[in-house]
Image (cartoon, rainbow, N blue to C red; front, side, top):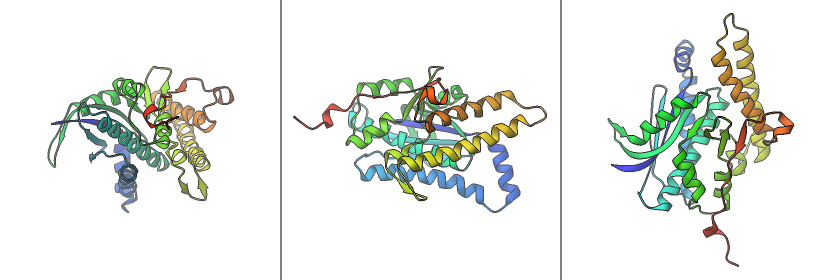
Length: 272
């Protein structure tokens, strides 16, 4: 047994997704779900090349995703690498799922963890699952213990990684901390589709918004609309508006969200 930072995520509306995949019969949906998982793993591998060393274990079973990043208990560097890797994976995975119009709810926690080809036995997974039950909206909640450790300071290889941490954690007015589902392309200055960095992120956010707005409109047109489901997507719509307007509350009229910023890692600052 070893300690690990663990992500548990649930794909919303999975029963209908599977039925649609069966009706289409071309493997498109399965490929999209598999690609999102591969992109998340690929992002952590890129972080490894840049100095973040954390092994990864993962399994997708039906609508349940388990991802664990083991660390050495009592070793700040090992713990820091596990947290950064989990954040990178979760944000990359969330962005790809959003782009393909799949919505997830989840939790990130830590604790004792073991898995092999046949068994998962994990306190970290239990705690992450309990957070997922509290999430309500399409978001990934972060355990308060991890937030406190981030506030105390973690080890990062340099300013680029501190920027990732500082853009990753958001807080809702309900008191929950959750992951920013977008923005990683901006922080890592990714180039794609004729855009780069911030402009690429804004292009993605615009597309996410249009997709979610259509869902909300379609739900409202149903004969007996489910208000609880509408509220979940309306929440996501507000978040996307807030992020697109660069978190300017007055400009977008959304005041329920805040960014959680952390102190700079003094160990990585140049000596005077």
